[in-house]
Image (cartoon, rainbow, N blue to C red):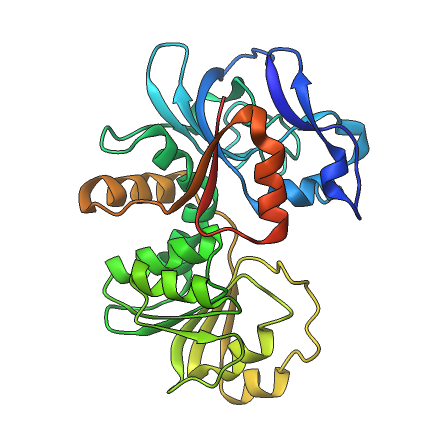
Length: 320
């Protein structure tokens, strides 16, 4: 079957490790289902995999892709929850949690095998392309806001970094929940588009805000960390789910964190139950993922190049 996969590890030139071509069909094992992929989406996790983060060389070649929607062997339209080992379903009870492409082959292929427990019904209101956007970036945003941030309608949330899959999801979901949303970004066009999505205001990266906020949604890391800490009201919360600019800020701002009793909460992906809640929210409210573009899987390399350049607003979708 045709697939996009990591053929080697290249920390400095990740796209040189990407190959497109034929690989064997997925292995069928007890308690697992084979899904015919209808749509899959890119995440920064895929670039990190090509760099060897979370993917040792002995597991190569590894099909990339965490997100997908498709049709199972019984004809059911499904969405894949990509966290494997969280429940013990389909794997050993003591197996550590992993995400597709770390231990098991991912979704950038015509077919993928996952534990049957990891399948959720695709709402009829969502297209395959829309549904495929939800299990990683949008689920991450959903958990950040509704499980970890401790915010309520009327609160003000700052989203660092306009344009990416998680940040656009945060804007849309936060507005749907009745929050005031501020966004920062280096690119003027992306800031303008964030306002079109529903952000109440957009500022240049590092700009002084009109007032301190109740919570900061942080995915950028080192480049924005000090600004995130300084933007919080006393007792406010930073929820961090990524560090695309690096994990080591010049200043940790520890004095400010303890003196103002700020909370720093790590957040990774989300549970199957949270994904079910996100799917229901989208189906019932009219909220839809922001899609940058849709390409055939055969053009995956150009999508990876776009993601690496950072010239993305929303999700990049691939269709086998």
